[in-house]
Image 1 (tube, rainbow, N blue to C red):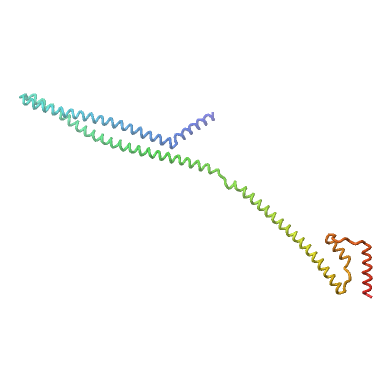
Image 2 (cartoon, rainbow, N blue to C red):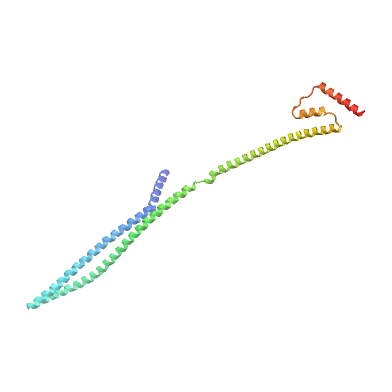
Amino acid sequence: MKRFFRWLKAIFNRGMDKLEDPEVMLDQARRDMSEALVSNREKAVQAITQRNRLQTLFNEHSKKGEQLEQQAVMALQQGKRDLARNFVREKANNDAVLGQLKVSLDNANQAVEAVKVAIKRQEEEVRKKAAEALAMKAQWKQAQIQNSISKALEGLTFENQFEGFGAAKERIEEAQAEVNARNEMMQNSLQGKIMDMEDQAMDLQAEAELQKLEERLGMRTAPAVEDTLEQSISIGGAVDAPEPSEIDRQLEELEKRSGGSSA
């Protein structure tokens, strides 16, 4: 039962909203003005009709007064004084009625002229209000369209949609920076290894030059086999290690030379 009453209430509210629609209200107001104008025109027609009837009566009594006057003159000419007196008396009554008709006719003419002016003003007002109604309808349509646009734009969320791009860009930049850092570290490591190899080569060359200088000065007669062996091993076995017997022989000769030089 409650649902039924709620349904009736919803139907009633929908009908009231429709009735309170500005477009419907403007149409109704324009119809009311048109109906009022038609009604006033009909009343003006009735007033003019009554004025015309008064005018007809006034004309008839005017003509009757003229006829009575002519009849009274003819009666006097014929020596019928009593008859002439009756015509004059009837003309006096007719003139009294004519005077009343004159007053009523003047009032009717004034009323009719006022009604005509009022009808004309009302027609102008109706045309003006009709134009205003059309303009107000256009404004109402424009307001509805703007309201629809505003409601549609309320759901737009450009910032939230672009946040994912910003986060992805930040992650990509971070990863790129990490890659650049690793490449830089790797490059530094390779350069360090190359520099170490260059240092080792320079040490070997300096050691060789030093041995030659010692030989020229007589401070050293032959290159040290152990140093040569260690250097060969340090550079990756570029020189094959001599057999143990050859090493012993070289050591014996070195001992003899050392002993001879000391003697």
